Image 1 (cartoon, helix red, strand yellow):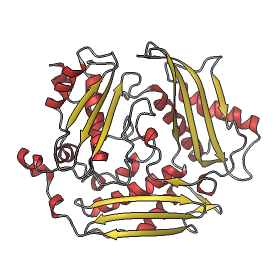
Image 2 (cartoon, rainbow, N blue to C red):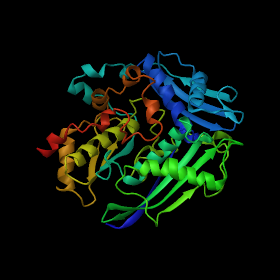
Image 3 (spheres, helix red, strand yellow):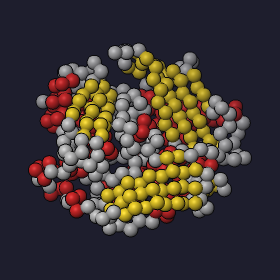
Image 4 (cartoon, rainbow, N blue to C red):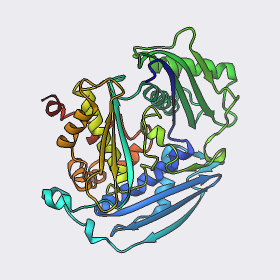
Length: 396
């Protein structure tokens, strides 16, 4: 296994067209579940110059105004210029309503173990969860830093520290590893869009980004850029306006950003735009929960949990663990421990995490908050799959 290598991960801001689509899709999921927690819904979006398209299939008693939700998200992100804004862009929809599925109209908190076992998955998928001890959030350092840079771009715009910034931005961080541990910052790239007619020249932009974004992000990091770190700011020149008027977007096109920045595997299935009775979404959360507890318990420095599901069964047909040579016990032994102590059945996951009721208990919805800056490794939201409450069981 390779011990010394360089690895890069990227992130994007909330105004990136792909992330705009993810946020619209998850805002729709939130609105359905807020009115009817038994809703089944899949919502996908595509956006381009002056137009946003929504395709959705749902079974619910809720009443949802799809165009209104989309315009609300666009406006909240801050797109208010002539090139693209929530008032004048066209919203097209293709909606299909299905009969309500009585099979899923149950209160999961009242289910017995045998009733949970009778709830089978309707999709076949292999999902992955990962954790490592490189950061306080148990996330790989490259994606952790890329997210921090992207968040800082947004906050610098909203706080008018750099008032000329527009909503679209992208970051990338390369980290050198020695013996599979972060050693130094190899390189980083920040691509920041600027409002038309308001941006500074490239030298001023470079200085501003280094001072207000990069220096701020690395202030409290143990590993900082050194004299040999290569830093690129808008290397292709000025990036004017950005957003859907410049490039198109789709729901589910940023799976690596949503998870582990490609440092670990992901299923390839989109996470956003699906109700929490879709195993290809919530199975990934359950796998992350198990992996994080394994690392927090000190059983491994890195842990990847793989769950394979087949249609018509309630339990995963395969549970595999990979610790990349860092395990204090064998991978097989750790796999046995998590199978014994963690719930991987669909009904059990919904019950433990209260996934169908979170949108109605959290102000502003729940799933939309996941649609940008990652579905895992979040320290700004109290995510149930980020809790390390089973370490005592694993240590025992």
